[in-house]
Image (cartoon, rainbow, N blue to C red; front, side, top):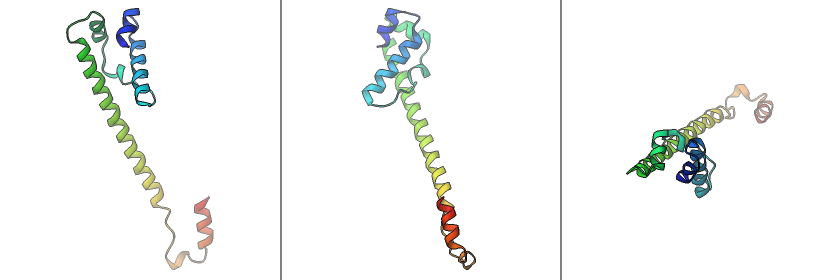
Length: 113
């Protein structure tokens, strides 16, 4: 896909990366993540169009590196979200001391709102 876009217009690096990301996302039934442009350079894309030996393999490696980065970032963000959820739900316990018994139902209702 990248090669076809660049052969049509050798200045279309951004479009080539966007199309590559769209094809990747469609193949995996996922949303589009900007993994192509993350690690590719214009020189690498020019080498691809010029059929420089090994250019396609270098681009594939960079794409895989970008995908690994995206997975790592997604994993880290999901872990942070789980930690925030745990922190926000940890303070919602019910009062067990005698001090809170007189207005227990009121405290419970205020927590549910």
